[in-house]
Image 1 (cartoon, rainbow, N blue to C red):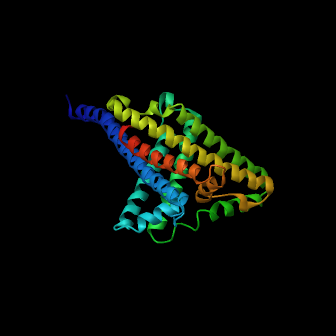
Image 2: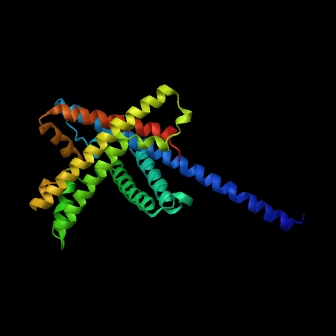
Image 3: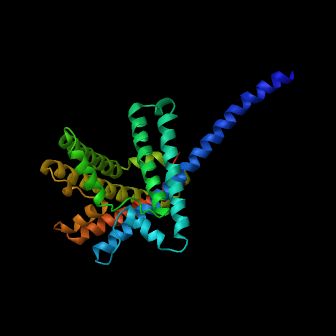
Length: 278
């Protein structure tokens, strides 16, 4: 075998190895992203429980969760770690949109992953801004109202805002239904779990997914109402949406149920970091 032939053979053998290394790197990025998501959802759920019992001072949204973390020893380090985790999630979702192969290369799935990548990029930037001391860009409840007000000023703005609300409602319904149907189990390596672990993760995925879907749908309803009434102040952020559950006939107990569900979704995110097939 000549040196040039051996060199070519080495390159050919090295390509699969490089692909394997790239896949492992993306897998690690995805797992880091799920851990970051779990931390934020669990903290939001805890804050919402405190609000339900009249004890919470922080807002029950990402801002409030980051504020809780910042107040702890080494909070700044944890905030930067979360920003890195969301950055990893951005990379993983983006890779799913761009590098999908075979049956996974479907336009709807690629668009969904692309949208998720953009979303997590925004969350990463906001978390890093908070860690750097800028406060993350203002109140979590004021931002949706500002965005809605700006959108309503655009040509056909009312239609656009109504469409955005309808999309949020649809996303919430889909998330809740998929969770209730346990569709998430298809993406988990259930063979690596004990029966008890499988049951616990199934419960967390169902309860957490339904609660998350309910929050999305409720936020979408407020956006839709803002469009119908031409009043941007009717739009609500996550904190105000959660607080609105206390104004239902169920009182604070509906908020407690949703808050516990969000904590469960945080736990499910941690389980996804361990057992999801990436």
